[in-house]
Length: 119
Image (cartoon, rainbow, N blue to C red; front, side):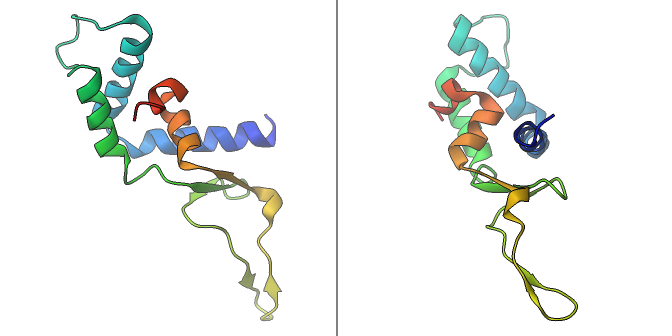
C-alpha cells in the first residue's frame, strides 16, 4: 500500500466511525436510489430528498477539512504546526507525513462523488 492509499484508508475508516448505522444506511440507500431508482422494498428509506437532508444534518459537524498524520495514523482538524523539543529548539511539522483533504474530498470518501454533489 503506498502513502496515498494509506492516507485514504485512514480517512475512510475514520469517517465511517463518526456516523451512526442509520446515517450509513441512508447513504447506502440514497446511492442505490441514485443509480438504480427508488425501491419500494425498504420502509425505512424516506426518499432521496429527505435522505439527503438527514445525511446533511448529521454530517455537517464532522465533515470539514482534515489532515492525516501518517506517522500516528490519526486524523487532525487543524493544520499541523511545529513544536519545541526538550531542548527548547523549534521543530517544524514533518510535512512529508501529512495529507490534506478538503471537506468535499472527505464527503466523497464517505458517500461517493455523485451523492456528495447533492448534499
